Image: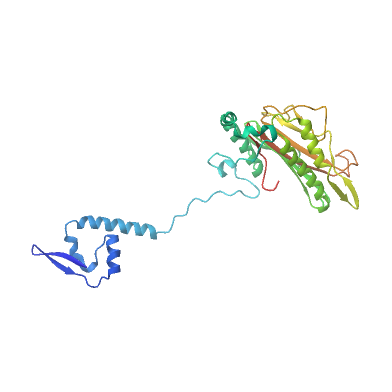
Length: 326
């Protein structure tokens, strides 16, 4: 490499013979001059090279520095104690399970008019999704705008102990700004009851698939009953057909109102020809029991319940309360 050196007012060539071609290429890329050619700093434009060299060194130092520990995403505790507002600081809550409308309602999914209606309802949708996330996280907040309510909970001092052959239903709801999300599932420790739980679960999912705007409620009930009563349960060597409970229904939900007027039967009822119109929420609650004894609150009967809240949007159905395992 040849470098011009200023000596007594004249420029003379000077050579750095120990720099290989590979090193030379590297030096040119980094805009540096070898240490034993220090007189090159006196060349015109060497100040600019110094600045570039300093910038290059700073970049190298930054690359060599270890990354600073970033703020770790919050993880929910067990039992849950962190509010969902802290877990999801963006305020945009997860969308539930989306299902398309069927048959004559397929046009809704591509209608620009219906999509525009959905955009107008976006704040309300986000509020109910927040309630659904609270439901999933099972947190506790002690104020009206977002709280957890249970249908029944053991009082202090309750001596009830679940046994291996017990079937337990968990049913509770949440609400945000009056938008209610209700959900239930059943737990059984003895695998003997698995068909009973499966009957209720599949009947619930069938009801969700069949539901929609302008769908007759009696048709939904007929589909639910058909699936429910296709199951049998063998209990202690005796086979029972699973039965739908006629006087228990799904229902519509209104602002701050868990039962908002319309009921969704879980059996075929020809006389019930009501249809879903422009309703925001509906709750599908399906319970199954053995034929005898006939009342679900009689000792010796086994009842399973699965329940979901679905949002009837203009373009599709959204299962708000759907979780990873129910």
